[in-house]
Length: 113
Image (cartoon, rainbow, N blue to C red; front, side, top):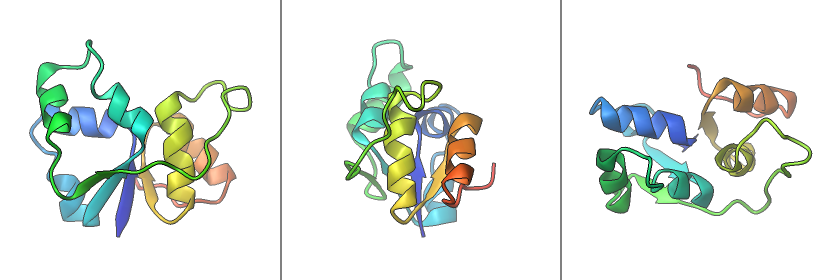
């Protein structure tokens, strides 16, 4: 199974040294470029920036074929707007509550929190 991850799950799993839960539960994970960028921001913890700079084999960065527009979904950040279409294309989504609401509305399968 494939999981599409937003910034928060990756960030916090790395910080608590539990990032291997994603491949254990889903096999492989995908993040969109916006999430990759968010994980490399200067205010992101150094441990997380180092981890994403050298990602494990089970994590890939994938550009969605389409993204959601900020004007249509003003409460979602760029990572969520890219992760949701990836999840809708065939993965489950591990993300914050706002993104899960949009997934439910669009009939995708969000990962259980």
